[in-house]
Image 1 (cartoon, rainbow, N blue to C red):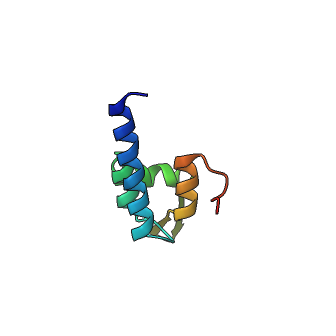
Image 2: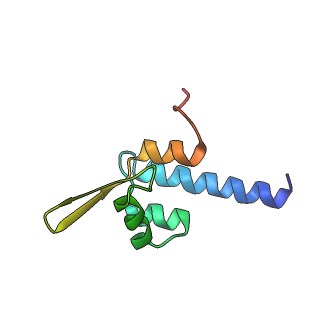
Length: 85
């Protein structure tokens, strides 16, 4: 792997670590969208359509809610089945 590619991956890992440290239980949809370089509206639409493997969406009447469990997002991004200790 090139030095440049290594730096990019290292920086993304730091971004992921920072995101997890700031939000240990649930990640804000806006922060996840920023990390993935997509618009929050697009991520919410994916969650509503059941196409987002790490996020939940539900509606109660005319209101909608969205959740991204931190551990689920981490496992999706890294391909981990569990967190090693």
